[in-house]
Image (cartoon, rainbow, N blue to C red; front, top):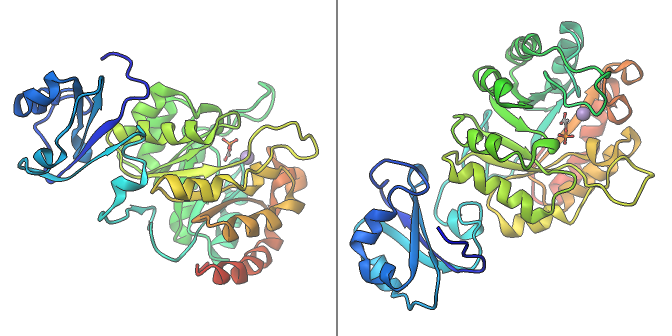
Length: 353
Ligand code: PEP
Ligand code: MN
C-alpha cells in the first residue's frame, strides 16, 4: 500500500467478523468486491477481523457516500476520521462494553491499584509484600521477573523462577499478576503464568513485540517509552489492538527531560490528554515517574485528581536493601497509610479506591 500520510480513514464497525485471513489486510478484497466504485475512486481498505473493525484510507480526493456504506450488510456504524489511531481512539469505543483484566473491569468508578516490588527477589520478600498490599486494597501484584537493567552488572531478575513465585504469592493473597516480558522468549513464559503482560518503557516501540502482544491472549499494560511522545504511545496501543488484542491499558511512567533533580519527569498532562484521545484505561506510575519515594504519594494524588484509572506503585519491605529501584519504593510499613491518603482525592473526583 502506498504511503498515505495525512489521508482520511473510512472506519466501518462491523456486526460480525468478516471471513478469516490476515487480520489487517486480507479482506480488503471483500470490500473491494462490494464497493468497486469507491475503491476505483482511490480508497484502499483494510479489515481488522478479530476486532470487527474495517478501515479505508483515501488516497486522492474521492467522494465517499457514507450512507451507502452504512446500508451494507454487517456494517453497524461507519464514519470518517482523520486520525489513524482507529481502534484506540474514542469513536471506536462508542456503545461497546469495557473489558476485564486481572479481575478488574474497566470503565467503572473503582480505581485499579497495582503494587509490588520492582523486582522479585525471594519468596519471603514477595510473600510479605503481597500480604501487605492485598490488605491495603491492591488488586494486582507487580514484580519484575526479568529486568531490563541499564548496567549489565546490575541484578537481572530471577527469571522463570520469579514467575512461579509471583503466581504463588498472588494466588495466596487473592491478587492478579502483572509482570514484564522483556523479549519474545520471555513473553511466552509470562503469557502462560501472569494475568496481565507488561511491556516496559524500553520496549515501547519494539514493533515485533507489539505485534506479538496482539496475539498473546492476555491483557497488556503498555508503558510509555520515556523518550516517546503521547502520539507514539497511542500508536503502540494501536499496534496491539490492530493485531487482535482488545485489552490494552496505557501507563504514564515519566519521560526524560532536562530536569535532573528527579529520575524522570512524570508527565501529568499525559493523563487528561490520553483520556481525551483514547478509550483505554490510563494507569499512572509515580514510582518511575519520580524515582523518589518521598514524591510518590503527592504525584499519585495528582494523577488520581487528573483522571487516572489506576496507579502502579513500587513497594519493598526494606527499600535500602532492594536489588533494584529501592529509592522509589514505598516502604511496606507505610503503604497502607499512603493508600489511605489517596482515598479522599479519589472520592473528590468520583472514584473509589
Ligand atoms: C517496571 O515497572 O518495573 C519498569 C521497569 O518500568 P519501566 O519499563 O517504566 O521503566
Ligand atoms: Mn522498577
